[in-house]
Image 1 (cartoon, rainbow, N blue to C red):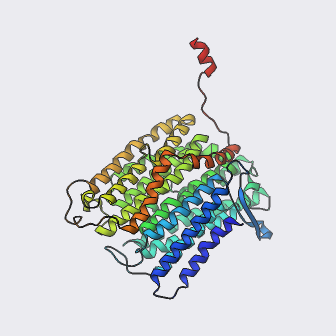
Image 2 (image 1 turned 90 degrees about the vertical axis):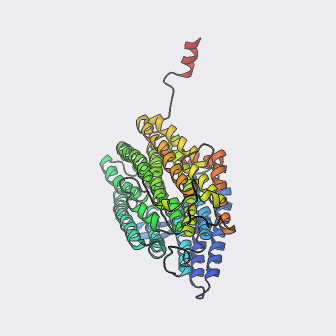
Length: 512
């Protein structure tokens, strides 16, 4: 069965079906979008079960000629890294569909004017297809097409259904992304011409560029595009605006999945296609990552807008992921990949719960809350669990990945890893302070009548909380899939693993 093309086709066909529904069938549009997203999730899980972590590197391979004259193929396949990110996308989309039930209705406080409901949910399904495609693409030209195509549905979701400054945020998001995409396009063309392979297929281009100077220029084109997408400091300024103005569900997919394309691209393309350039630029990237970790955390502490605070925490988290990718250590790279998944779940939960709070209170500002725990204990409790995962509390999912990134980075680059630990301390400050101001203290008059989570909202948040706890205690299923893929990814890069300063045998002999 052509699993990957099916996973792309199903949401596209679902989007067409939603768009063609007669006007006025808003409820049916929502229900159809939810059913389609659940079908995609079911198919993804069936495919994932059939994946063999110790088998061939790229599985479920599909290759069809697309533009034969230029060697362009519709090439799809996944390794363990791409697989877990596709699963992340498939899990989040039905949750977002259910959470976004009223995002286009124009109801509730501080909501934008009513827009087309079926268009919003059709855009969600198109975005799901693009997200799956970008992680599954093995043809670099096809990857670029999906990389740019993702911008279209997200642009309209922010610009048409977002907050008061939605147009500004959407345009800023689009311009930054197009700038990065343009640099990547130049690098993709340069790679094709210089490699002289007459193909864009990624496996065939590994090792094709050997000249160090050429590698550096091509690396720069890919890396800047991915740094903007991630975003990595100082290419980050579009994210707080976009995340703050986007509907909560769109913000989840923006930060939870779309931004992971940047860090995924660094790990997949920058390291393997340009290994010498990656080593050359590693000190610079590590500086950017560490600055992003500390900067994002410090700026988050000073935020008054709840969604902007969560966005700045993500900038700090993306610094950790970039640190893990460029530490050139198997442990760090595995931790970075796991971090991509865990960050999607924990930050996704934070954005959704923030959306529930804003829908009830009608304000993004933290100071307008207080005492939520007394009137809505389930809402406050889930907010606390998601926040604690964001600060990497042991027992919750983010702890495992952050610990692996730090321990793996310390093996190869101890100074950046040591500085990065400041982000752990700062995370406790911004998360706990936000929770204290929102949920604790006396109940304000505006919050006194706030309702707790309803049945639909519990179905939204329960899977995320369950995954955060389950992966905190038992991350082995994901690690078993990720580890072999990371080993093969780093095969073209010199990997330094930790060895004791004094061999164990010598230590034993000295003790005797």
